[in-house]
Image (cartoon, rainbow, N blue to C red):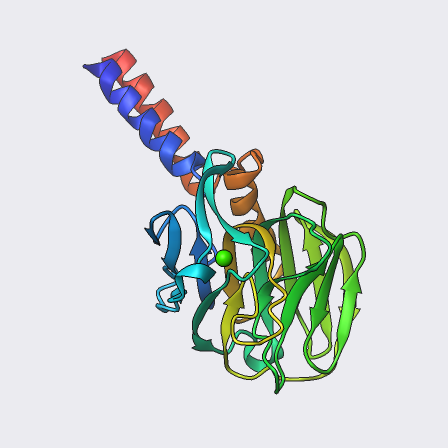
Length: 268
Ligand SMILES: [Ca+2]
């Protein structure tokens, strides 16, 4: 019985301390993850439900444009696969960069097919919009005013975490798997309130369909601090890339509680 109680506490410690949890949730505008909230029909994704609490669910009514839910795509977890032809999902309209600030995280795998692949953005035919897309191994930013390229930012057929932080009116920092790769200057603009296109420009004739998988997307309506950004990347790293967990203060407390209980039981 005493051993059972001890093991029970160890079990609690294990699940609280070592499961990947997202601790930074302030100003979270959109949170899509392929291991939750995916509605399929015949294997094709009709709705990818927003986990941020804002109900900005991504959906596709045209069955020929629905991506596929692939199980066991990365580290035993699911991902959404876009066919590079015409697949794309669309959210309700919102401002992804309020006051010209924002932080975007994407866990994705590109499969080079010789064409441009739109991963994420609000690209339309007119207005100030934004778009992150790739052309082979180069990630590009385009906002209808300014454009920039991040050379060799994409590795073919490999999942990576891409983090994009707009931390001033005119600067964007770009990180790959938690490492700063480059920063680049953009025009001092305010993107318009638009639905978010995922996987292709489903609202535009220039589809630029993305060929590859997306496992998770997080968009914050603020420029995250260095420690907040690192915390989000830690969560994604533990979940998808077997990054060693960093014990939180709460789990360290549980270790001491577990040891205390063990010693107490031993003495009695
Ligand atoms: Ca299709």
